[in-house]
Image (cartoon, rainbow, N blue to C red; front, side):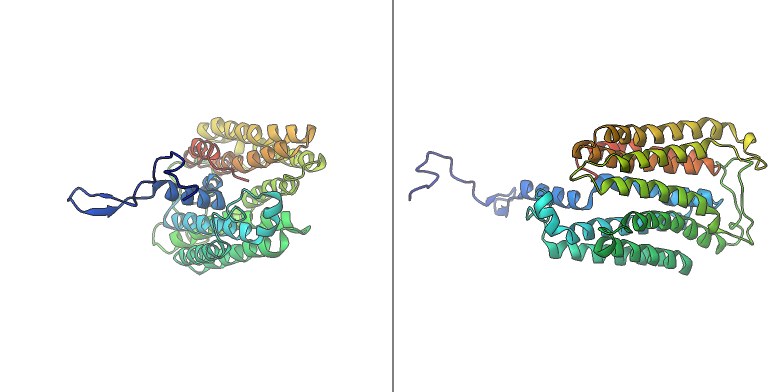
Length: 356
């Protein structure tokens, strides 16, 4: 036969079965194909950005004056599921656009089918809501609002003027989910509702057992939402580039958030912060500014697509030191250190799978 591997002098393909240790035959594992499928799903779900999620719940718990507990863990699990649901749904919704602008993405390249991506988004959404329900009705209500925002953003709002605001709302709700779930589960346990974290500063604000208030985390949630708004506004130009105004505005926003962390509010006792907080809060803030501001400045000076994409990636990774700073500012510096421990993992994953 013309074109046969033997006639062309090529080595014939290996048989699909190999001898097993028992003397019989067993299917040989198709490891390259399995690795390719796993990589395709890792790209679809953007797993390198996944490590920016757990810090939302920890920052929310700290900002509400509570130590992490069962509710915090449930919030982390729910957030991870809903975040990945958004990633899968994003590529499903953008499959036609990506076929032109990003043909290497998993769906247009044929490595993941559109149906599989949509099914994954639905299953992950259901799993996230189920985990949130285990933390109580208030947590489920916040998670439902978060899920609705994610689906509305991906299916409708992304390409409108409301896109950045919708994304900012989602991240704000994610931090509030951590606060709500933590307060709800601890308030339901006698004797633990008002317990302060042993790692928390003695001068940090705490709530009594009779008046748990997840709303105390709202300022921290709004700070995270403001950062998310800025990054999302820049991301709208990452394919074509050409925008100087977006990275400049984002740079101003990032600088404002950093200044707010270091500003001492009169009459709050903050000049008497614990030594660990006084040491770590400036360090976390500096890490946040360096990670986000430097690539934004480069993109403002040269708004090319590669530099704009790098600015977006830096803004995503900067969420980790931002969460750490929010946690330390709330009086939980050790929890902030735990959040910062995710930075090496984020860097390692970013070298393998793009976060944008």
